[in-house]
Image (cartoon, rainbow, N blue to C red; front, side, top):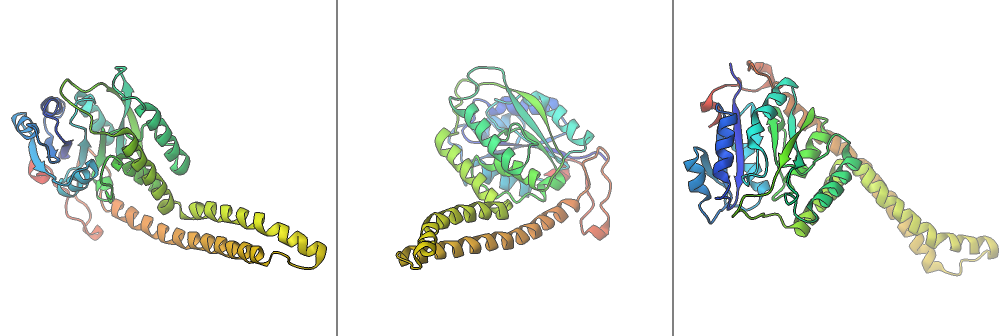
Length: 329
């Protein structure tokens, strides 16, 4: 059986570009089913997508993360490609990314952006991308160079183990950390990244969305690395406690009295809080391991990406993997 392939194109007011993206995907992957998820557009995005031959679905809740959450729940495919509808990525190379997924086999192939036009990145975006990617590399691993790329291909088992909790542009960060946390096989391929066509306007807000991504990284660090996160807080509290308490201890050793009793009580209370924070971190670490085990088991219910799709053993509790467009729709 041939594997099924689907393409998902999130769009919000992309009438100037979505038609070309769909046509390029169709030329590169003629066997794929192409979905355009309209995210409450107010222009002719839907008409342009339909004219280009895409299946259009609606997601009224604004935000790319909401679109990805809906698409991952709705679309069934052995390889699912996502690409922004603004024609900044080279959609004609979709076949190469899908082939690489099957050849690996990999659970995720990321189209790492290579700027071919000086105006492709808005001011501050390149620096922000490097800073945020560096933060993720430091916290979760070094297997990523372009964390915020919106051009990716996923295996079925990646999709079925991905919770998709983000709402907006921070969804790519969540995708990256999910793969790093479960140590899923991932690779990158350099893809040309160019400026938007005339009439297309970026929806990314540099500072607001950058702050949202940074908050997500910190939140993921707290959830995925609870012992380290709480140890850092406990360490800070310990330093404060020692700074307050050591002078009191020195005075007691020298004079035999405690002249600053309130300071001594405060220092002791802060130290107790530091110990409690550290203990909570270790307890949450146990829960995190259980969550990772559940996600890993969900991931293992599905076969690795392959050009020949076989049946999944019944004891794994999963239906046979079907092929053909009707399995994707």
